[in-house]
Length: 300
Length: 310
Image 1 (spheres, rainbow over the protein chains, first blue to last red):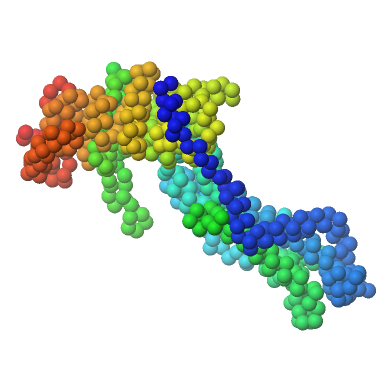
Image 2 (cartoon, one colour; image 1 turned 30 degrees about the vertical axis):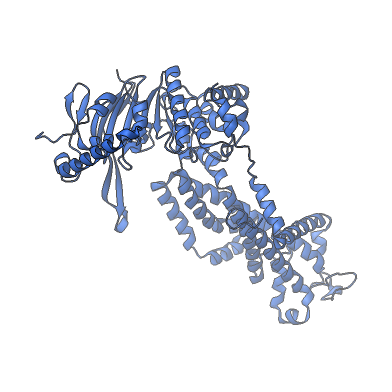
């Protein structure tokens, strides 16, 4: 072959780092993000690990002989008005809140990405119709409908709560992905795939989707923070979980009682701090990811 | 019989606007183009930016919607053709202009080149790998590079990967959309000569789209000159370059730089003369809208868009 000679001369052997590597470098460089990242890992493994050994029924059982006790050796973070151990509730509550946050983020992610990708990729009339459906979902009064659902759903669990939230939170992602897919489909590689006879779904998921991966990772992380907060907010208002399913929101909800708010800080302060730290940490990591995907903003 | 026959091809894009996104006008990207390509020949489509050459190529392969006209490939009408998995798709392939955006940066060379094979041929992984290695060798890249990503190659190499992908299915017609305009000149010659080599080996027919007349002169047997979506002149390479009839073609041919510096002054005077003629006679050669007139035959193989009054 008469070209091989020139070829070996100009072959560019320089290694371009993978996305995972760039992200890791960025997180290590940004100390706040690194601490946040370690904090998240620590809390998640701790909460999920310990809650295996904790018995939820035991913890939420009412004990009239230990009502509203301040922190002591028996109850590390005291008890609430039903004599229930706050520490145990905090662990299980954090687990439940995190589970909801992660589930909602994943489910909205899958629905939003698929929907947005299809809409943007096909474009034209299909896009127009699909986006009008999104518009319809967007104008629905989210909080009101969630509250109604909460009232009519017979069995209330992490799963049903996640599904209800997912039904109204996928639109933002769909719009974002659609806007990027509209750009990608015009690029030559997508057009080339069409001329090579590749079916549409393959082009969408095997060609276009990998090119949007960084965007998806960033928005999913930032969404996770928002979703944890949303669950806590709803539970605080009393439209989240009942008291026998502890979550960060239900613990915060006790603070609606003025006496608890003023005199029994151990019931709600730990949960408030936990929500605050979790959201902050996830956000910090998300911001670092965001910078990592944009070469101009990178610090690492 | 000609391999590809395009008759009165029109591609119009709607302009939407106003209330309710109504159609308020249209852009006539391609406006009544006819030509045919014989098997094994190279047809050059030349024109300035926005003259509709790429649109013509893309509508033949089915990337653009054809407004009217027919495209016959091997006797089969391609207009209104829907099925993706057919042999016709297999027989027409395309080489894209930009070697950077035409290869998906997230996929390995193996995946890129085997994409058409996976779509049309059911072969085992090992066979597929062997085929890809053969193709890579054929385009002058080392077979070991199958696991590399596109960004690890230079522009010329990437374009050759694009060519390997296009010839993977052994097509009959290849639409080459400015295949070398994104490459630097030293690499251009390499890729062009290589394209001619595989044309002989595989008996390929090219539709060669370019704005570079030097390259067209090197590559093509027949040439069509486009301006604002219409042909202004069509004929054999010799006819167009030695005996241009339309002032637009004359101006284009005059603009080809001459390598010999001795002729520089003479060339400049000639160019200025042609430019002057172009300015003076513009209204005679184009209609009120600035479009070319219908083509008229002036010899066996030479058609020019001259006004009816002659």
